[in-house]
Image (cartoon, rainbow, N blue to C red; front, side, top):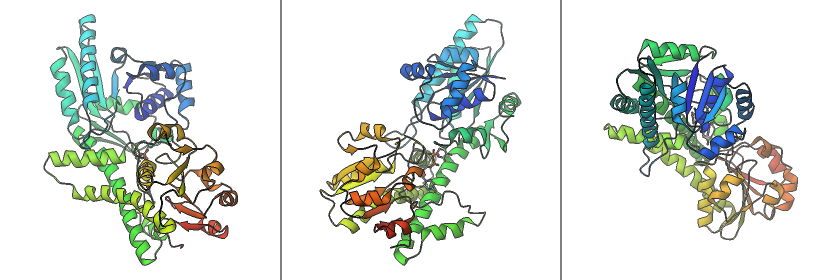
Amino acid sequence: MKNIGIIGAGHVGLVTAAGFSKLGNKVICCDNDKEKIKNLKNLLMPFYEPGLEEIVEEGVEKNLLIFTDSIYEVVENSEIIFIAVGTPPTEEGKADLSYVENVTVEIAKALTKIRNEKKGEKIYRLIVEKSTVPVLTSEWVKKTLQLLTPTGIEFDIAANPEFLREGSAINDFFYPYRIVIGVETERGKKIFEEIYKPINCPKIFTDIRSAELIKHASNSFLALKISYINAIANICEKVGADVEVVAEGMGLDKRIGKEFLKAGVGYGGSCFPKDVSAFINICEEFGYSFNLLKEVQKINHQQRELIIKKAKDLLWNLKEKTISIFGLSFKPNTDDIRESPAIDVINLLKKEKAILKCHDPKAIENMKKIFPDIFYSEDPYEASREAHLLIFLTEWEAFKTLDFKRIKEGMKLPYIIDGRNFLDFKSLKDLGFIYRGIGRKNE
Ligand code: UDX
């Protein structure tokens, strides 16, 4: 059992805190959002993540998981401190590292105070970057701590990037493909070996810079895979082939692998768009123009426009046509709408002056904050009534079992665009729908 501190109770921070407490460690999780901490103490989660609430509840009950808004409390009580604060994109698409810097300064202040209170005692802390940061951020963290902490405090810096996916974050914490640890001392390495001992997966120990790069390089590669298959989907449409079949044929080659070859409306979320952009920027700073990744971004953007093009191909003019959008979150099993394809598609349809009706199992409240003036319904049948066209942008399981006969009866025209290629188009066609997928041979 170790004393672990987590600074930042966002998706990464909170899941990591809950996970480590479930493994039997004593965890303090801190956030500067006092309201969020108050809610967490009352077991109210700040976002929806399957399985998270139960683990948090258990941790709090066993007194293994404590929430606080004080960084000092974290630093005082934890040998290992994970920095898991946001690194949101700046206007130029770089990673905004000011939160990481602020936290580093706060850690240094806390260490100074502890030094003054506990004179003569040995003080050691392992400070770990958990947030996704550009390569060489650790150098700044180290420099800042060295500059601001008094002598007599020992610390190691490490990078331990997180690869969890929203919606399956708990599972990804306990059963990851690998754990990447950038640490340059034996002392730091030993601590990681201990805290990750219960997790059975390959653990790779590297220098810190390589660990930082592994994160950006991995996420960008996955984004590249998605854009690649979307480019293939486009050529499929032009020549009358089926991207689902092509992806299956490609994916059976283990060197390619079948994951992340789902063509559709493109990637969204809090990671891929931000990380690809930050990676391009940091490469640029070091004199490398990563044009391949610029093309990945371009293709991803074109996939949103493709939906509008398909809508126009079906409806001619979109002005005053009623269009229903099902699926507002950036992917299923989450209420997260950050960089969701739905935001781009709604903006494009608003420009065309279409009348919009939206539905989602979890994300309506979040979307209302961005587009308060459009119609939403929790009831899919109400949300599709009078529609000329129904567009699916997220492959929620619940959508597959909708009563499509009932939906069709309520619609003005029987048009469906499946932006995720997940619906059974044969049965939809049998019901009389006109179906359009992405790169699918079915029209
Ligand atoms: C991603 C990474 O998978 C994770 O390792 C990292 O830590 C954070 O970023 P996440 O953003 O939660 O996780 O979602 P993910 O399941 O990877 O999907 C990202 C986006 O890509 C979604 O919008 C999804 O719909 C899209 N996607 C995914 C595709 O369009 N096609 C695919 O084949 C796979």
